Amino acid sequence: MTKLAMIGCGGMGHYHANVLSKMPNVKITGVCDLIEEKAQSAAKITGAPYTLKFRELLADCDAVWVCTEPFNRVEIVTAAAAAGKHIFTEKPICNTAEGADAMIAAAEKARVTYMLGYVLRYTQPYRIMRDTLAGGELGELVTCWTRRFMPFDMSVARWYGWQDKSGGVVLDFGSHDLNWLQWLGGPVKNVMCFARQIQPQMHAQEHGLVMMNFAGGGAGCTEMSWWSHLSESSVGVVGTKGAMIVGRDGAVRKKLAGADEQVLDVQAATAIDPSGNLGQRDAAGKIARVDNPNETIQQHFFRCIEQGLTPITNARDGRDTLRLYLAAMESARTGKSVEL
Image (cartoon, rainbow, N blue to C red; front, side):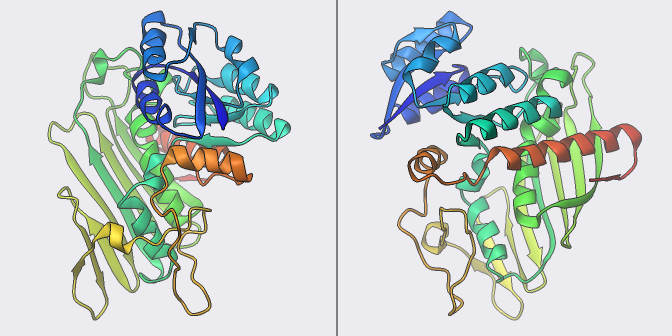
């Protein structure tokens, strides 16, 4: 049984509270938010006491679950690490390189687990697309992409609509996609970005387009928008032997060279090794099924604690995503490609 303290009780905090409070191997010992009404609401969900001061929770927990804003978590994470607590935070890791580095250094010094909430790696169809590419079925990577348009007026939000707090649509919304594309393609060689603030009342970029070349070959692209008026979703991977594409209807289409197109039953086709060795084949060329192919992000965190594993979405991985974002912002500012 892991004793858990929850810090940050906004929308994502409430979402996680509903999931975590039902897990049999987790005991929530306390919740915290700077706004008392939010803390009280989370306390009702979890049945745990609440406080407005996060340090009061550190004495009676094994781990912390942090859902504060990315500009408001360095003190929390470093204090939790110094107290020897395992750490989960929502994405992105931070909005500054200095903050991210300070948190990683504190966690590594304390030898605690530090995991980020990049949920695409734990959900379909994103997992099976990466698994199929990593297993070699699609051949070598040619290109991969995501397009996610989710119209929403972020100017009415308390902090999302400010570039220095949220990082705009490219970091707050698009870092999911940047993280997933790096998972497919590996380290990025260079990046080119266009990003724009459109509404005069906004103080953050509302539309972004990021293009990258991977050091190991192939290219990636992601486009994200809060401004597009129309919603849109597309995810795809093209390799030298075939392709997989998912449109807004959610159908996972796969076609290998010389074969007929398939529409996959994702759950039946899933072959995931939740230790992180996704797509690895045995000597016979097969990917063995595992006992828990549909592990959630919450389950993964606690299994990593219990078994001493490095999380699939660990903090250094999140730091790489932040580095890519910062390079993309330099490209957007200068209009030039940026080497990483």
